[in-house]
Image (tube, rainbow, N blue to C red; front, top):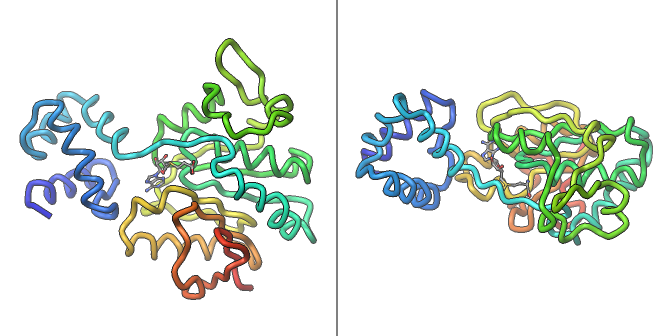
Amino acid sequence: MNEDYGEFIQLLHTETGIDLSLYKEAQMKRRLTSLRDKRGYSTFLNYYSSFHSQPHLLEELLDRMTINVSQFYRNRKRFEILEKKVLPYLLQNKNHLKVWSAGCSTGEEPYTLAMIINHFLPLQNIEIIATDLDGQALEKARQGVYPERSLNEVPEEIKRKYFVKTGVSYKVKDDIRNCVTFKKHNLVADPFIPSCDLIVCRNVLIYFIEAAKHYIYENFSRSLEGGGIFFVGSTEQIFSPRRYQLEVFDPFFYKRIC
Ligand SMILES: C[S@@+](CC[C@H](N)C(=O)[O-])C[C@H]1O[C@@H](n2cnc3c(N)ncnc32)[C@H](O)[C@@H]1O
């Protein structure tokens, strides 16, 4: 890591609590360098020194570092496994579920979970906590309004049941919105949410270095109830899950060993 970028990372960490050294460097540096250049700064330290007088530069940088791409029913096949295999297993002896959608971005993932779990449980028995580092993404999530392209994978009957079309957008119905609580949470700095039956963290950990992933897996595992399930993204299978008291339940789903 060169000195300029290294010092910049430390200053940013002190200022915002966000530690960029935990993210894969080449990828992150490339994203931030292109933004810095676009704003006309030749070094990261010069760029940083403008953040106090021009706070929008810092906001823009934080927006660039978080990659918010999401979609309802993203990788739909995995949600079919969730519905056909994982939920029947989790609901064998329960009629209430506590679910954590970590790195939920603009809300498509936790709302998808609520719609699917509602096939099994009344909405008042579904508790979904959805967290992200990015306050702006969470604000959009709370509003629950999406362009048609975000719904490309949504089955027709689900679209009819849980969305209201308003002009060119789709709004998630209030009863679904009410079972999701959105909160700001940094996976590498804040306390983890305890006693979850299901943790969903997809397309988030790919951006982190190994040491950070290790820390997050350990904490997710502790946050699960015995027998609880951890659902990961399509390129995020865990190498040696037993290190974390987890075993494979189905590819992309891990079960907490009791
Ligand atoms: C590509 S989105 C994934 C959205 C959703 N999980 C999905 O699969 O469609 C990655 C999200 O991770 C969030 N993120 C990045 N670093 C984070 C951290 N340290 N703590 C919590 N969320 C973080 C970003 O803000 C972004 O919204």
